[in-house]
Length: 140
Image 1: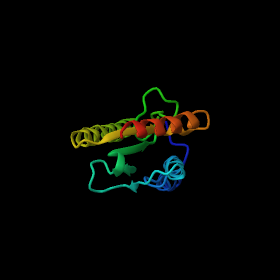
Image 2: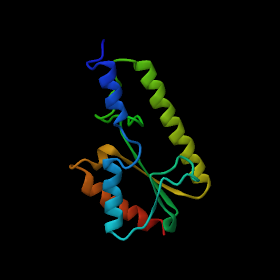
Image 3: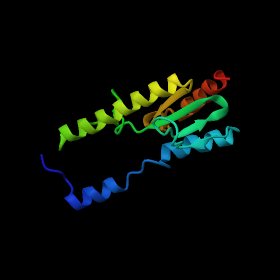
Image 4: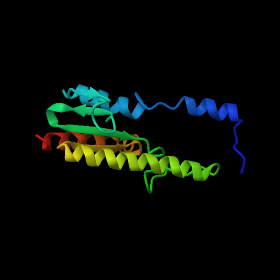
């Protein structure tokens, strides 16, 4: 099956996808700051360069895009019909890297919170962010 976009259009679209300062990440950051939590961003010295690091709570937060991190059973994780093998390899590598980083962080005594992009959609955002506060307070 051929791609619905030209090679140039597809390349441009893919180049616009960010790895930092995504809408879901900004939503969580603003919520945490508004609620008095102070954090660091993308700490290079920690495995997996977590999106948000709360040193006081010895907690890291990963905000995963459902597609890029292979969120099983999620409607936002649909394997592309073109270059399927390449995409499955790419997403599989992301999942393996996530698992490795989480293991190293746990071994270092860090608490890990993983938030999926779909959990920040309007239907679930209130519950997700409320649970985030509860989880953070339980780490102290």
